Structures are given as structure tokens and as C-alpha cells.
Image 1 (cartoon, rainbow, N blue to C red):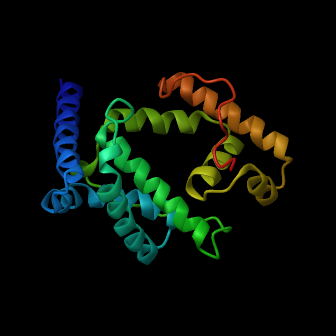
Image 2 (image 1 turned 180 degrees about the vertical axis):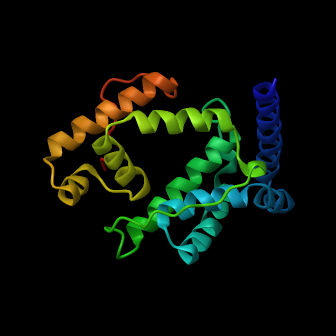
Length: 198
């Protein structure tokens, strides 16, 4: 019963955000402000986790909503839920900021972000994803962390942790295959790209 009410709540949030995105695509600035009020805390958490710096995260969050304003017309609900699309925009902008910064080759410090239950979206899928990541080998977790949160490519990861690039690609591919099959998150593709393999 609790899981069912969580699903209904998530569907309601996604429906509300979907309507706001449609209004933004028509040039509605009030809808953009409403979307900011509704989602900025969640998106700030994503950006801060990647950048590890509050000031940089605040600046990047503004870029996230600038991109939402520009790209809302290209949002495809057949590919992502509204929250997934916003999270992807936030992730992409944070990685762009990492590459733009001069000191982006260092792994950012781990930042614990307090999130209360009212801002947590889909707690059960999040818990499933955390359990799945915990089941990966330590090197697989480290490689995915460096690729996703630090924006490093396979060559940079190999140099940072002192392993051959072939081993990095193999570990990354095994981790992604395991996660994809467990989550059934993405369509199966031959020659899936390795994260950070630019």
C-alpha cells in the first residue's frame, strides 16, 4: 500500500512537471520560476555531488535552468520522465563545468547532501539502485564514480588509478551490463559506450 502511494505521488510530481515544461516551451517565464521552486533543491543536490563546491554548484544550477528554458521544446516524454530529463540536464551541465574548470582532473571530495523525505523522488527505485551499485566490485564502483561524477574518460581513469586502459574498459562494460540487466533501464545495444569514453 505504501509503495503504491509512493508511485502515485511520483506520477503526480512528474505530471505537474510535464505541464510546467510544456508551458516553458511556449515561453511562460512564470512556469520556469514555478519549476525552479519545485525542483531546484533536488537538481542542486545532483550538481553539488558532481562538483563538490557550493559556489560552482550554485552557478551551474543557473545554467541548468537556462538550458531547460532553451531545450524544453525538445523534451520527449517517450524517452524520459520529466524528472529523469531534468536530472540528465543537471548532470550534463555539471560535467561541462568540470571540464571547463582548470582543476577538473582531481576527484572532487565526497559530499554528503542531507535530503528530507519530502524531496526524495521514487525512494524504492533509489534503494534498488543503491543496492545494485553496492553489489559491484570495488574497482567497478570506482571506475563508474570517476566517469559519472568526475567526467573522466577511460584513458584518464587508467592514468589516475594505475590500471591498463583495456582493463578499465572491461570493468566498466561488465558493470554497465550488470546494472542494465538488473534495472532493465535502457534498451540493449551492441557496443554500448563506456561512460566517460569521449
